[in-house]
Amino acid sequence: MLDARRRLNPPSALPRPPVTTRERTQIEAFLVLRRNPLELWGPAAYKRDILHGRFLGREQVMLNDPDAIRHVLVANHENYGRNIGTRRVLQPVLGNGLVLAEGAAWRHQRRTVAPALAPRTMPVLARHVVLATEEKEAELARAAGGRPVELLPELQHLALTIAGRSMFSLEMEEFGAGLRALLMRYARRFAQPGFLDLLLPASVRSPLDIGRAAFRAEWLRLIDRMIDARERQAERAPEGRPRDLFDLLSAARDPETGAGFNRAQLRDEVATLILAGHETTAATLFWACYAAARLPEHQERIAEEAAAADLSAGNAAAALKRLPFTRAHVDETLRLYPPAFLIVREALGPDTIGGRRIAPGTVVSVSPWVVHRHRRRWRNPDGFDPSRFLPGAPPPDRYAYIPFGTGPRVCVGAQFALTEATLVLARLLRAFRLEPFGSGAVLPRGFVTTQPDRPVRFLLTRRNH
Ligand code: HEM
Figure 1 (cartoon, rainbow, N blue to C red):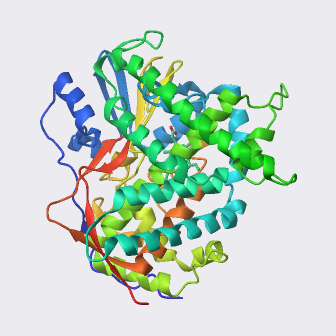
Figure 2 (cartoon, rainbow, N blue to C red; figure 1 turned 90 degrees about the vertical axis):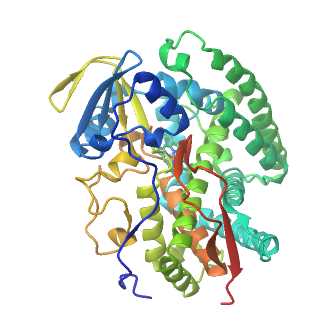
Figure 3 (cartoon, protein in one colour; figure 1 turned 135 degrees about the vertical axis):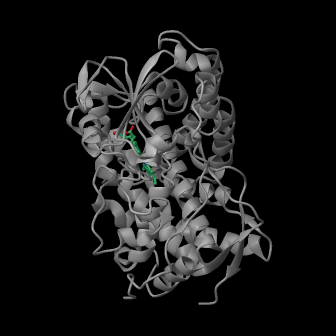
């Protein structure tokens, strides 16, 4: 194996949005929240452990302290539910699927879904990852031909194909373009909370909720067509062991009531897993490629490592342990560009955090974006330095590195996402040399996930390994 710990040039800082030192009015803060939430936090947020404030009449607490994060997301997690802003924005797309479910319904869904995404299923999932990436490599080779390529849509398409095939045995050609177009429309019009979304109680519809309801009807029709396609396939499939997550969901019975998932629940679960399963991984892959293009020495190291490993479909899962540098590059990408940049909860009952009383209704947030760049938790916090995550390096504090959240509601697809991102990155950089095309810094923007602030093109040159 190559020596993954070979020294690289000193870590370089990649561009980030400006950190304002100016006090903002509530209106200004609201406008920043809509333009780019990653610009919300001033220098104090990156230095202090707990921040308090009021926003639109609600008590707000932001936690950077590992003990406080553990308290809210692990020890006393039952006292903290999803807040109204998150619900309004996600419910039309995710319904009552695993991300938004609570209580007994959540436990049942989690128990059903988790085994299909557990580490022992990775060889099957890794196979899908490699086969789909091979196809994408061929497409990119044809599309590139000396012309710059906008990578984000390519990576979204790839991640969607992988999610559809690996979880639901669905080819996404028929649905992929329609699904992405609907999601883009939703993101542009409804995905950012409006003023009244944050002010009105949950029982009152906001003006944007009316558009969201119309969107939901259209979205459900699309998911229904996908389920119909999957069920037609199942009619032809032999009886026997469940083949994928869809079979597991269809066969699942609630341990208490014995009831199965009805059609509406199945729809929400399929939508949740397809969406949560591809949007975040595509964003991770985009930033991993962007960092590699900006840091050629890192890129060459990944390409070398990938060339020395057998990354064929049958061997992909086993090859992962031969990709420590590639994996460290992915881990560092998730530190500096966490796709889920903000985890928000609302206190259901009274509590005490860090000696301070928390009243019911308080909005409590933990921002992976801020925690991962916190001055007291990280050495050279803005420097892109994969060596932090190489084997043998001291592991980061468990509650200071949280790209997948933590506690009972930790991301159910974390293992899958890491497997996918590492394999796709290794395969792509083994096949192509990436160079940034065009000038100007690319800044991350919090827009549902952590996205580039503009379309970004790359020059792809085939490597003749
Ligand atoms: C790099 C990729 C990913 C990132 C950064 C990510 C991040 C997260 C985070 C931070 C949470 C916790 C949110 C909270 O506590 O409020 C979460 C939950 C979740 N994620 Fe992921 N995720 C990724 C990939 C995936 C994949 C591939 C899947 C599905 C295959 C998935 C499915 C889910 C689901 C269903 C939940 C809700 C779990 C629950 O509440 O029990 N995610 N994810």
